[in-house]
Image 1 (cartoon, each protein chain N blue to C red):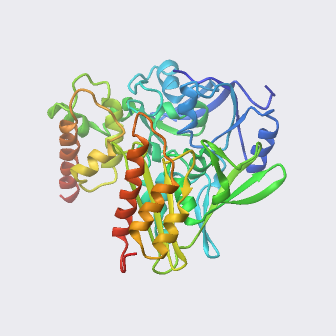
Image 2 (cartoon, chains in turn purple, cyan):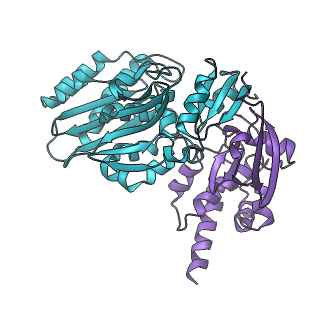
Image 3 (tube, each protein chain N blue to C red):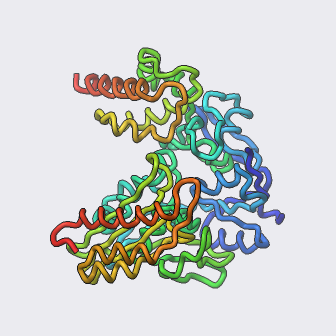
Length: 166
Length: 277
């Protein structure tokens, strides 16, 4: 290997609003970095090839697969995980709706599901059930059969729409 | 599993990226959105690459009008293409394609240049480029060059890019007045790779039909195009069936794929406005 290519890469980013500086292995993906280095175990490492959505996190405003982004690529990024979104109460209505509607059983998919659903809700308006289903089609849940999840997201969209008009 | 990278370098410019590739002794691998490459690395299908990360080169991203063509930077993300008004006006086939590509979170990271250079035969964008008669713009140690889409895709995951070259942009001719662009595909679930996909472009100059997921690379169905130009849909379906040689795999048999190709052509033609071919 030439010295132009590094096996450890220096990165500087914010995670859940706090500055983070680290030296990461070249091949380490964001989820391992968040879980193993920062102890943020909310987002889950599962299929590790972009299929299941359990690792979904927010990077620079977009929901992305944490397993399909290298930590080295997060230099300068603003990263949010379910922990940060919980602490700021940004998604508390969504979390409450998941509990109320029994939209989780084992809970493994829930952190990714919340981040993905929050991206859809942040666009405003009340998406149709088909739109919700399509938006969450990249997030697998093996317990609920999805209906309760769609119910929860739909009820939050309606709730926020009412709030926005009063 | 966990990825194994040989090393990582962040390119500051296209020139820098070309230098890095030249210095990689054949081990260099361009990293853009990473939605295919990092998956392959995690599965250890790709091991020990020296990654040249071009994702921070901001002038490779964005959509602009250039004469009578649309220039789309290689790093323009799928989600950007899906919502871009210029794309919607001048190359609506690409707008439609985005809704078929994987899932929202992947569309937020994946790039059009990455999809074209990766050349997955089941992917939408390579077939769209072929159907639209797009041009690929690449940069390498010997300077820039342009490659027609018809000469770009060579084999499974193989393009006319030579070692050391980087795809920087794609230009697409403007859709002319009354031009229609239609994409049809069949996938088992939303976001899955298509079992078969078909792009139909109807221009005053004639029809163009490109298929994906029917062979080792996207193909132009020239026989079917000629039959549609002559106004004979049944002959076009027959020609299409004869000119593709789709694979059988765990997803679908060759016979089913061949059948679907004809179904998709009929569906696409049925969506054309005005006089049906």
